[in-house]
Length: 217
Image (cartoon, rainbow, N blue to C red; front, side, top):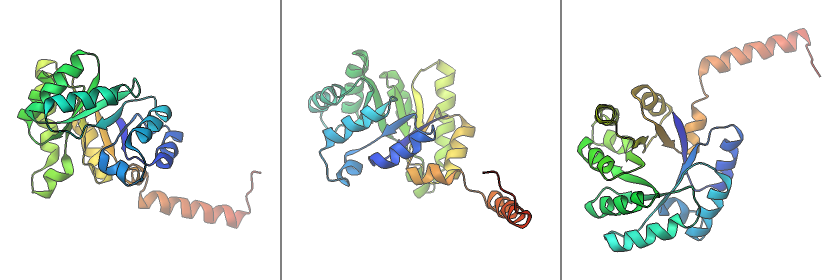
């Protein structure tokens, strides 16, 4: 499963990239606004750092403006994936951009029917929102499973990008059920390394090293 980092924090992206944990980045205007910087400048800087796909989101709701924004975003770098909402205008924009060879990430997916439409429109990625479904007492992983079955049944090439990931368990469950990609905040990805038994084992080991006076350098 590929890891996309859901952030516009340049330092956080560089830190995880050094560990080989960045296959791509997802951004949105809300995340970039926190930096106080120009949205296009931040996206360009991320694209220069990360060779994998960088999702950049349109802000319009009508097709014509969405398309113009998408083309402007796509012109920033060849690894841009234009992010559009799962509306009819978004699907229309997805079709035009994908036919022109631009990667498209269709976001705000909450049903298998929506995911089927996105695949038919040629989406590179479909982003089902796990955490937001969990918030209304619907198991988001069931949606991932349904999309996986439908896409496999018909050979759709659209990749399932599990989004609204909030915990390390979400990452594990998305991998088990067959998501192609999971996008998560840096803190969630870093939390995947944590386990109390690992820490206990390390504490015991270091105590033995200290008692024995072992040194290597």
